[in-house]
Amino acid sequence: MKTSVYQELEWRGFIKQKTSPEIEGLLSKERLKVYVGFDPTGASLHIGSLVTIMGLAHLQRAGHTPVVLMGGATGMIGDPSGKTEERQLQTLETIRERVESVRKQLERFFSFEGDNAAVMVNNLDWTAKFSYLDFMRDVGKHFTVKDMLEKDSVKRRLEREQSISYTEFSYMILQAYDFLHLHDELGCRLQAGGDDQWGNITMGIDLIRKLRGKEAFGLTFPLLTTATGEKFGKTEKGTSVWLDAKLTTPYRFYQYFINVDDKDVVGHLKLFTYLSQDQIGELELATSAHPERRQAQKRLAREVTALVHGAAAADSVARASEVVFSEAVRDIPEDIFREVFADVHTSTVPAADLAAGLAPVDAVVKAGLAKSRGEARRLVEQGGIYLNNRKAGLEQKITAEGLLFGRWLLLRKGRKETCLLKFE
Image: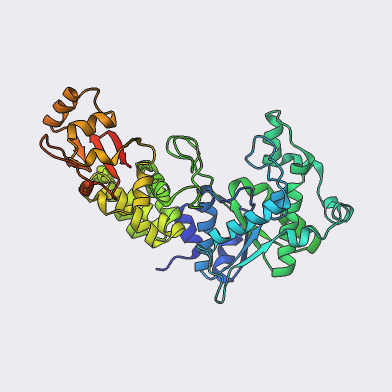
């Protein structure tokens, strides 16, 4: 039996809150225009936005029309939801550049052609036309300070005795008006977003009811944390994992997902891939039976990287991840090789040292894996040194022909200590 899109979202774990039980029926019986907003507060979205993006993508695949709102206006102010301090205000030019950058990222997920082609709008186009007095008179008067103070985004900041400016306090009014505008201009009846947007969404629903006497709806998706309680989308070093390849390379992106905890991987497969319930069930069983093989993590990393960076990039970094400790390391592209070993200690050596053939013992000392030739000799004799992932021998000679990409020698001491020699 074919599941409805609501049931699909539900089993995948997308449904967090909904403003009405009618939403399930509406999604089954009608073709809705569903609005989701993205504020360009950075040059790129990070993977924390993927839950909302994928939720909206599922709705489009079921025949609904995504209305992707770029917050050219609200991005100048900053949403206080989930924030502990005031955002830095951005210039109009910076906002425009970021809107264009984020737009390109979203085009990988939504189809802008066909009967239910996605629509992309910028709230600066209508907000900029308002004078301050007109906006306060026509829109602001419909909101009470009491109601605004009750919203979690404001209440939590005040409970922590952290200040919130009038600018950020006004954000929810602007977002509510966006919903009203899209309702009037495009017939948009449903707004979706992360669970931290619940208060902003309900404000828009209230405004539509007050001014138009119509019912609108809201749906929120979960905000994720990892099995260890850390914020989803943060690396061990505390840096964000971005969708922009210039900020997080495809290889680093792939590595984030391949290192997902066993406790999180099934949930991530449901949220971040289009794999079926049966396919995910098989991967769940494989993880239970042989967790060391990391089959679910490999499939997750491959699927998500392909969605964000394309199939070719996903294939390339998946291959690199598989062969990094094998002799096939020489078959991966040099740019990915350099990315994989970017944090490895590297020593520069004159290319002239290769003229007569460099002994492995000398290479080990030059790389800093041993303090003396005697220690290096013992390591090689014991089989503990690998050159380009091949066990080194005492009689071996390293020549220019044996280097990776004509310049690199990869040395490993056991499995954990890795160094590079760069010959120039």
